[in-house]
Length: 203
Image 1 (cartoon, one colour):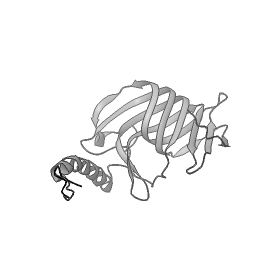
Image 2 (cartoon, rainbow, N blue to C red):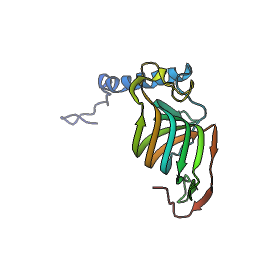
Image 3 (cartoon, rainbow, N blue to C red):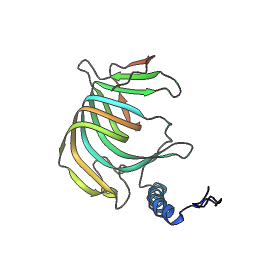
Image 4 (tube, rainbow, N blue to C red):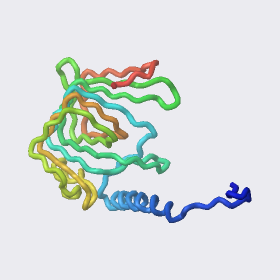
């Protein structure tokens, strides 16, 4: 690099600006990791390097909680997520799709069509986006995430974190992107799994 007179100068990092940008991010990530270490944020398994899409005609759930968390890959890569927990759910026209890394192909799973919905217990998603028409019953918005109880004692976030819960939730025209999903039981009535050579997805 040269200065205005054409002389060579050594590159310099603006350390104050760098610190101003990085410190808040490091503190936030550190707080989340600390919360995980103390059991405040669930991290039951390492996620793959691929997110996936889920759509549904309707999702009807008894009990609902939502709070912030992270999904972490085996290599340590961290993805901020919104954790959604539902103790009991009925799902119609379920579709799940994921693109096979490094290929133009995708895997598509469908269930819960033809009048026989899919059902799940202790359902949990690590979401990065959700679109739907939603109806909540007895909802608390802004509740301390560590005090959430509508989805059981293990479905809660970090103390002081933003959370919300409801006794019942109904979502229609659901479109979501997630890093992980888990359930105590998942009954996929009418299961249909296919490989798409064109990379088709649920939406």
